[in-house]
Length: 192
Image (tube, rainbow, N blue to C red; front, side, top):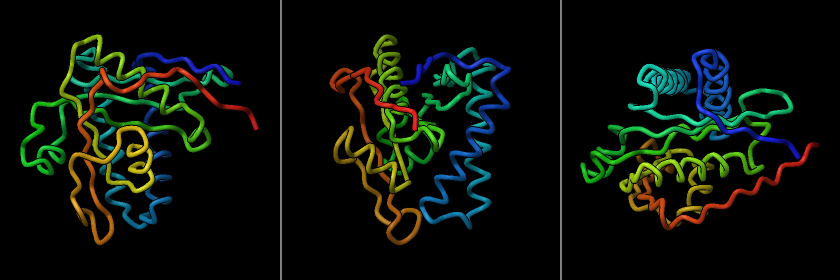
């Protein structure tokens, strides 16, 4: 069993986080069969780099990240952040979620996926949002694999935008209640 430390980012984490964004986004597009969308991959990476910069520049006021660190390797293996709901969410919900807080950038290094790291980060974020008394929370996804994970945790999405990205590639948005989502701190991660 590995020890995972959850902590806030520091300026000196930027390069390693940029690598994580690149690796996770590229891997996700590959798993979704979208590797040829090179421009979209780059736009997604750059948007996450901007979110991180916003957190670091504002001390967590505009965006707020948590990092997951594998204490055995001292490497960043995951992250999660919250900030204002994106223009995409606002558009997909016809403005109903404008002004809400979005949980996003839920990234786990491919070697650590499906081992509880993402759940650990999510529950840490939900506790953070509860402590700040933030109640209007949402999350969205256009990736089929991630959508299945979110459906298992949050149920049927509140908004389903069929064929948003292309035929068979829908976009989903969930409204989240931090108070009614069970929070469990359990990590089922064994070395292979």
